[in-house]
Length: 530
Image 1 (cartoon, rainbow, N blue to C red):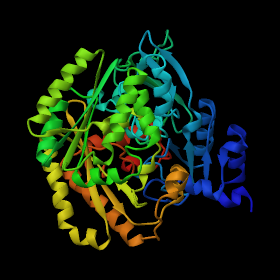
Image 2 (cartoon, rainbow, N blue to C red; image 1 turned 30 degrees about the horizontal axis):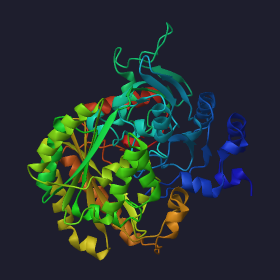
Image 3 (cartoon, helix red, strand yellow; image 1 turned 90 degrees about the vertical axis):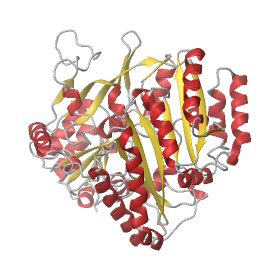
Image 4 (cartoon, rainbow, N blue to C red; image 1 turned 120 degrees about the vertical axis):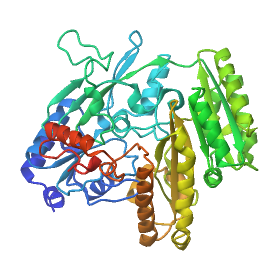
C-alpha cells in the first residue's frame, strides 16, 4: 500500500511537501499520524500528513502549498496539551511539528532580549541563557523538557517565575508569524525597514498581542523575542501547612499581592498525598543532584540535598493544605526581606514545614513528564480556572459543591480528584482540579513517558465509561467556571470561549480571522472559530 493510499492525500501534494521538507520530514506512517493527532486525553481521527520543517522558508512554502490544496494546517509544539488544541477536527489536515525550528538566534545582553525559534524548548533556552548570566522573566512550565516557546505563546502558560513576572505572553517583545497563505509577518518594533530591532513591543496597536494565546488559530509563530533579566544571585525556599482552604488562599493571595515570591503554589489534601506516592518525588537521585547543583557552593548544595533526603516521605505528615514559595533577588538581603514578609503572612494562620518540595522543583525544573499518569498508572487530566483574588474562595467552594453533587457518578466510576493552586503576578489566582481514573494508556503516553517509569506502573483495561464520565465532568465544570467569569490558558477546543465572550468582542475576533485566514484553514475549531 502506498503512502498516499494510507493518508488519503493527493500524490501531487505529498510529492510537493517532500520536495520542500525532504522525505524524512513528511510523515505518513499510521503510528506517527495517530501519535501526532492525540493529546493527554483524546485520540482524534488522524491527520493525513505530519510535516517537520527545518527552516522558516520551508514552513512558509509548505503551508502555502497545503492550504492551496484545501488542507487544514495545524501547528504543534511539544504536544503537552489536554484541551484538543492541536487535534484535527477534519481528517483532511496537515499537522506541523515545529520542533526542528529550535535555534536560539540572538542573545543580546546589552539590550536585554533573546530571539528564539518557536520549536526551541524552555529547558534548552533556560540552560543557554543561564550560561550568559541572564534569564527570561517567566522561564517555562513544568513540562519545559518538551514544551516549546511557540506552544506556550500559542496556549499561554505559567509557573516558573510567574509569581513575580506573570505568564508566558507577558515576556514577549516581538514575533514573526507565518499566515495561512505563507506570508511572513514581523510584529513589534522590528517591523520596520529602517534599522529594525525587536527591543520594544508596544509601538502603535499591539499587533503581536493578536497572535498570542490564539491557540494557533491565526498563524504559525516561527520566531519570538523575549525580555531578559539578570539571573538572580540569591534564591530561598519555604513551605507552610494550613488547616483550611480559606487559610491557604488568604496567605497565597497576600504573598501574590505584595509581589514577594517568584513561585507560590499549593496543594489540597488529596493531591499532595498523591504526589508523595510518586516514587522519586523526593528520593530520585536526579532530583537530589539538581538540588546539590543549585547551591551557591558545592558544599552548600550537598547539604541542602541531604536535608531533602532526610525529609523524604514525611514531608506532608499531619499537613492538610500545603503552600510552597520560592523567593529570589539580586542579593541575600533583598531575599531575606521577602522571606521575612512571607513568613509573617503564612505563620499568622499556618505553620512552617520542610521546604524540600520547592527545592526539588527548582533543582530539577524540567523533569520528564511522568506525572501524565497517576502513581499507580491511572489516567490523568486537569482543568483549570484563573480568577482574581476576591473570587478564589467562591471558585474553590463551587468546585467542592460540584463534586459533592456528582458524588454518585464519581464513586461509580472510581474517579478521584484534587487540585493545585498557584498565583501569577499580583492579581491572578489559578486553581487546577485534576482527575484520576483507571483506564488504558494511549500511544501518546508510551512515547512521552520514560520506559523505566512505565515499567513500574500498573496497566488497566480500556474503561470507556469512566473516560466518558471524566469528559462530561470536565465539560460541565468548564461551564461552572465560565459563569464565575474565569479565564483560562490553553483554551484549545475545550473551553467555551465563544460562549463566554461579549458578542461584539467575538465579532472582532471573527473579523481578524477572516483577514488573516479567509478560508478558515488555520487550526479549525480553535477558539470556536471555523
